[in-house]
Length: 147
Ligand SMILES: Cc1cc2nc3c(=O)[nH]c(=O)nc-3n(C[C@H](O)[C@H](O)[C@H](O)COP(=O)(O)O)c2cc1C
Image (tube, rainbow, N blue to C red; front, side):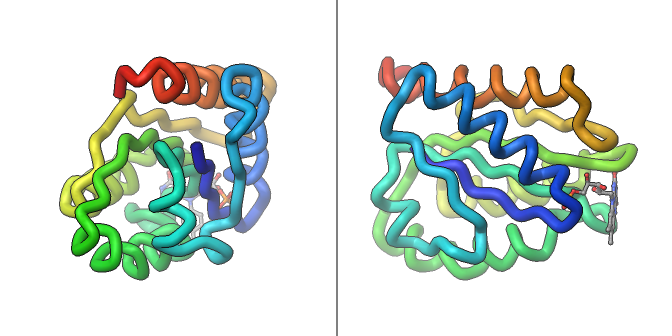
């Protein structure tokens, strides 16, 4: 399982770290990487991908969009179809980023394993707990082979 994040203020990074903690309890093989540090190879080597980033100007954050632009053709031409989960950090919305990510990922095509989650505001303890649960749920599903 691969957790990939892009973060400017640290909000998405904190959420991604909580996802990682939750996932680790169920799957020792979980990796966490910055979007800029991975490409199609690392994604192909994973059983599923959990993407964590912000909504910026109603869209997916630029760093995450850059990753998806880089991997789209290499993954789709290789027939790589993986389950994914999505966590968006937002100020007051997040729906635009969710819709854009879903549209791109459907095209590869990746399968949405869990309902996308939006955390609004700088993540407090409750938000971090929610991210931990998302990581745990995704890791468990992958481990059980239900996605
Ligand atoms: C340039 C910019 C554009 C933003 N646009 C939106 C937006 O369209 N909708 C929203 O809900 N929040 C928006 N935000 C707020 C961020 O999504 C929010 O602060 C998020 O937690 C940032 O996470 P990060 O710093 O880890 O990338 C924007 C922030 C910045 C810096």
